[in-house]
Length: 71
Image (cartoon, rainbow, N blue to C red; front, side, top):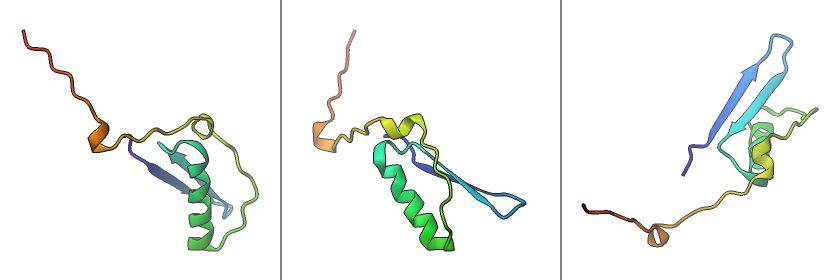
């Protein structure tokens, strides 16, 4: 499972830039809502990264298979 990160930049002109990393699909949009609630901002521009168009697969502990080769 990849680490999910949120990168926030405060620019000198007062704008806030936010990037998500490791968040696949439409789940990244949830982070925008969190930012809006935290700092009461208006979103003026959204640029979607390649991760937005990818799907995230989650594997539960019971579904993991481990293959070992003994020599």
